[in-house]
Length: 340
Image (cartoon, rainbow, N blue to C red; front, top):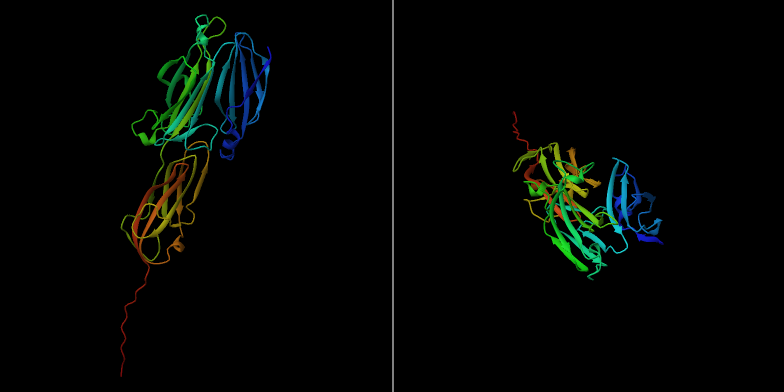
């Protein structure tokens, strides 16, 4: 049998690694597993392209897995897999979110995502083998736990949410307004949802994964400003301020800004020196910043607002704010007299 020509499914892999942690590098490879022998062959691949498979396809078929390995911390990610057989249908899963910056699909806990599933090659004849007439579609969900990142997670422990049988060819779009990762505070869940197709077992090959993709769910960021209290009157020198930032999205820019008057949404103010923080990573980040000597952004006395703002692929969000009154005027009381 001729070798199989395949295409990498993670087209965005190279772009994704460029915005990953600066200390990390990625190695990508295709793993081919033959059935029924179980022979395995790994072939390094580029982030985008196509090449011939190293081995011919045996009568029992072969499974192709697309892997990427992150160097720091050392972590392997199975990005996609596909099983190819003599009469086995072809399946595809494509997950789309508002964040297209990563090879691994991801989104925020309060944002929607879509899943496009496609099946081709299903047969319907009475004499056709059962694995050629039906496939199983499964949905799994798994929490990473408090502050978890998914590194070294045991995915066999994922909870099965649903299972269905598909017997017709075509494409379906599934829309999820919110994720299903378990957790009491829905804004702070972190974990993943996986969507997979499996073939039916027969005498040539066991039940095999035809296609699979997962999306990572990361929490909504929050923050606090300490050192200035709401409605405080500040005389003369501005106090030291501490910015506490939790669960900053892996691709985000966060800063403190100030503007005249009480708090208002959508106002563009002056960025406080030393407060800007750019995150280009694969997981959320926590930070604590101490701000001193930022008087230059206050050009007049009066009512001012300082707020923490984060910019993500989902838009601009205010994390917190504090409004206060500034009076740096020095007043002198004196009396004059003469002696005659």
